[in-house]
Length: 477
Image (cartoon, rainbow, N blue to C red; front, side, top):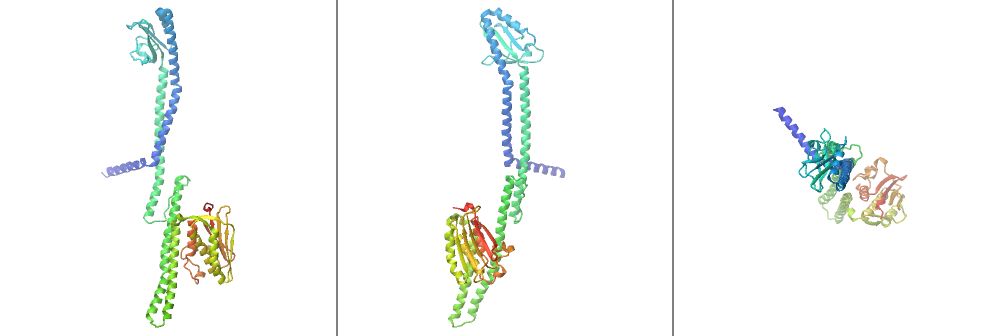
């Protein structure tokens, strides 16, 4: 019983797998190609038949028609005796494939090489196809003939035909070959379709298995690639790129949550402590309360700035702002940012130089691009020592780009191994801990650059840091 149950289960599984295979798109496409291939083979064989057996049949029919016309003329010129002599003479020729029969209206044979009138009913044109051996044909072997029958004046009946056994055998062989060829084609096509469908199902099942793993919470799994470089491999590559993006976003979200919980706990605790101390130490001096309130406002502004930056980054990464893209004059954006930060640089004794080369226009969000330039200038001024220099350069179109914005400073710079990390949220170098900030400036710049399809590059300015924002050619408007 156990063996029977196992066999039944195996059979059920095989049938289920077969049904899944039949329902696949690849199998249906294979059947479609099979049907087209079988139809093509059938058309080719039909043309071959038409040009061989069909051509011979046509030639025989024309020959018989000419001979009938000649016999009719002979009958009109020499009467019945002359026709009987001609039919007897032609019927007596050895190895003759011609068939003749001349009878009276009552069926009495006057001349010919058949023992009786065929029972086959002729068609409307008088043509009939019958088996010669049944009527004592010219050969001992069974053969077939095609003949035309007509009635002469005086109600005499004449039959003229040709032995068609060789052509009939050729036709039979061709039809048999056609059946074998079509059968083999169908089997090969069906087998190929099954193999193709099985391969496609295996690859699609790998994608389904990966998606199930991801839905269960394992974001590290990826769709396997088979190395063929076909559309399935390209699909796997696109899916893996999408999964990498999702994993980065999920990791970034976790990091943001952890960073917000860690970095905002200190300012909130400090804010609460100030208010609590002011309530515990009661005093009639209003300046004490004013100082506490001013410090509280400053701390609250820092918190609001942090949340505003986080919201801006999330909005940029979501791509929602892409719907608001319009042609943006980068020269105006750079000029406004330079006018805004030039007094700040002068106050610290820094020299801010602005070099605008052309007026490139890109398709983007002007507000976000202005915020990017402001963030870069703010970082450069913040980390450049007093008396240092800052350069803001806008370059126009060049091979491989639509425009380039560069901000270079003479500050301490960023080590090469940290240039990718500083683009993450809340990441700050140890040398920057003493200065105000929340570690979101470059994260916002990177998110806006990605939104616009631009490339963000951090390089050494010797000394200092150079930040370049390169817009792709397709961004040009």
